[in-house]
Image (cartoon, rainbow, N blue to C red; front, top):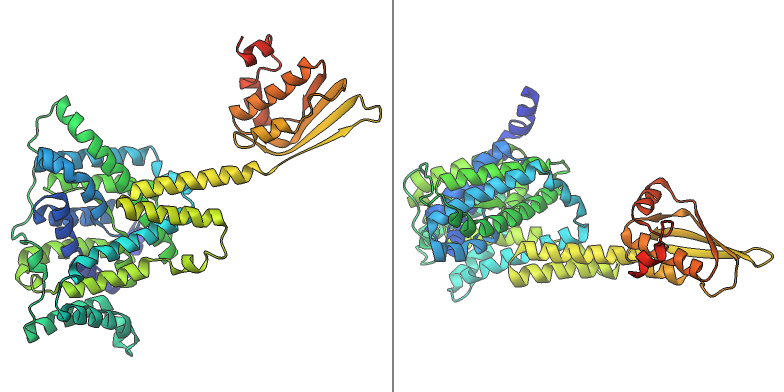
Length: 495
């Protein structure tokens, strides 16, 4: 127990504290922006980010990953807030948390193994594009000072680490924010600041039970939104956990992460906050700034609240150009540039899955749609590919009265037609042997194909022997097959 606490909390104190500070600064404008997207007061996003980050630090299954209010979740709340108001959003947030906890106990986090690498790559690239696109409003119809500040911020971020000694001690995004803020104040530049995004709260959050009637009608209103929030939140969190796993070469507990996300969302709803989930951009900022343990996420949440409530006057003067530079760095670092170079090397099916995921996510701004399309395409391509791994050889005995068909490969819905077409039902033989010793039957479509082959031969007056089925195939054939049961032809033909 003590060893676990040391490893997950105290093994990287300086790096986690500094990374947490950088993440907290970057969270503020995003939380405000996501609140505006959802149509609620900036306090709702800021309180949510504080609560989710602090709670997930204790309950989550991925140390070093940042969770807070996110744009993907905010987009799903717009209609609910517009039609029913904030209190229904808080109730939906609590129900979303309950559904995520249930998903954790049902071990749905394990379903991530069905998401292919090409889908994850497409998800990452799409998110990088969305992060960059989110910065464009800050770079349009502005003075040249904003472009100069943003370019200077990027120069600091990428060049500062090369300075001897000090370059490795302080995260360059933090240096960027401090230097550009001092520069803007000293020169008196009239550029957009964090304070222009919205009013920062000046009080601590308090416990709030949503003022909604506890009726079936209320449940019918909030459940569709809660279910959508739960699915999108878990998808983004599981994807982000997988990416951070790769960045840090450490494993994570996906099912614990599901439960942790649920608990943190219940807490957010009870403190007047909106639902949230893991943030890939902030998680990458955290990792690249040196954050590795739960302490970094906890620090980010605590410092976020402290700075907003007690240091709001100072935070409000931070130029948005500094935070835009940090987020552009995140988008550049998030995008998988290897995926572009690998377009010529990887199979066409892999490239189609990756590109389709990117296009759908960017077009809809909904991560769930993109992942769904990517997983569906990947499954279709896989089934088509495996369906080709079926070979059927045939040999006749010397008298020509018996033929043996040897089936090698996988028989399922994709290859069943090929299986049937490989047999010659018109050949005049007395006996047919179907050797399935090197084949595997996966589903009822495959069993139906075997039934059809056997019964077609028997209709032609040919004796059929099926042999060599492995145990798993024999089980499904015995259970669902009809060719060795009374009135098999009638059953198959529907008479």
